[in-house]
Image (tube, rainbow over all chains, first blue to last red; front, side):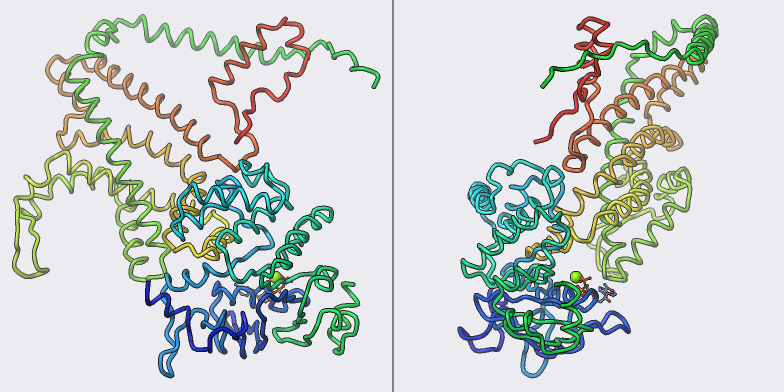
Length: 268
Length: 317
Ligand SMILES: Nc1ncnc2c1ncn2[C@@H]1O[C@H](COP(=O)(O)OP(=O)(O)OP(=O)(O)O)[C@@H](O)[C@H]1O
Ligand SMILES: [Mg+2]
């Protein structure tokens, strides 16, 4: 346990460090370089939106943040701790699987296609990680799951299997499942783009509520309305680099870069 | 609302072809039954006499034990081998591949005989420093009695087959499931055990049921090791009294009875693992009979005309 605690500490100074810091993050799949040096900072309590055309590397970057993908160059910190590595002297050491798993406990992730566990009911989906990973008692976890379902407006759906829920309901269960680990950071990868238009609102409402409660969120989205209303910072990515960043209001209404303008004229 | 329109009372389409076919089949079955039941050479009285014979029942028990234990060995070994083959450790993957290659590539009968001859190959088995002194050693034939040899032969062979079945099941599970579990901080083992394997079961169970049924019959091969399972028990009896045909019938009836039970069991297990995959489960045979009876109890005309609403599809949850 102590080496795990150490692993999540890392090098940066405590307390005032940003929630996420990326410095020159590169990622390649074989010969194809998908991320070509991403630098950015996500502050505590901030809703940080990532937009950009398809294939620009948004999902890839998000997946690097919780080490579902290994980065090839650069540095990535979450809450001051290096993601996936440990710095000892001037050498980087890969973290063991269980140390990586330990880091991920604090980072919730919500996927475009929900990825609920189909063989478990909504409540069981939410209980799974607290019970297996945090060692909570089942009774405690069940209680917590019921509260979380209430919070996402699905208090009466706990016994349903994912196949018995609408897309919007599934996504809200997925959010509750991530929240059950009491993360300090939530990653959303286009959480509403697989949903029918009339179901999008419910999911965005839950996310808005979460933002109001002060959760730090990194959101890949095509919902410009949400970005403008709820976002505190926004980055436009294209071709594996950050093209433009700033406050969502500024970037969305007054883009500086031609590529940003071209993209926004298509989606707005 | 103008009220419900009158229920349709139409004359159903007639199917004369089906009737003709049914008659032909019924006649053929009757002829076959006659040929079996009234051929004195089948000696049904002898069949009846030996059906519950002590040594037959003892053989039956051995067959059941062998089937159950070999399948346990096959499933556990198969899961291990499948996970090894999908492992990032190249050596483990290669070892699993080699095992499967050998055990799937040679006849199980040959493997069984090999296990039976193990004592001739290595008269003593010992535990100690590899290539060095032994701490403990034992006569191979004492250590591996016939039953164990049979079990090893059947179980290891089965493991090789199950490995491929389990692997197909594991790879059928969406990668998003693994990602979601990892993102929640679950370990690789937890992800495999709690998330991937239960979902893989839906793909794994049906062929495993077939494997079990097939194993039940394959156990008859261990008669070559002179292990007294069901078939060997029958053989031993007819080698004394020359009632070959009646005893083969006795043995066949038992195999048939057991495979029938397994088939029903398989149905319920498949149903269990369909949980969450379908919105509603198909009705069990018992439920089906019940709906049939309850619809028959209503007036036959109404039962025929009124579409029975979603017959018996039991809601989950
Ligand atoms: N596992 C992989 N192997 C090879 N190439 C990949 C892999 N994953 C992603 N890519 C490639 O990386 C590029 C960036 O993909 P990514 O999913 O990050 O884009 P995105 O910005 O999220 O796009 P979208 O808006 O369509 O989701 C794409 O060109 C994709 O083909
Ligand atoms: Mg994407």
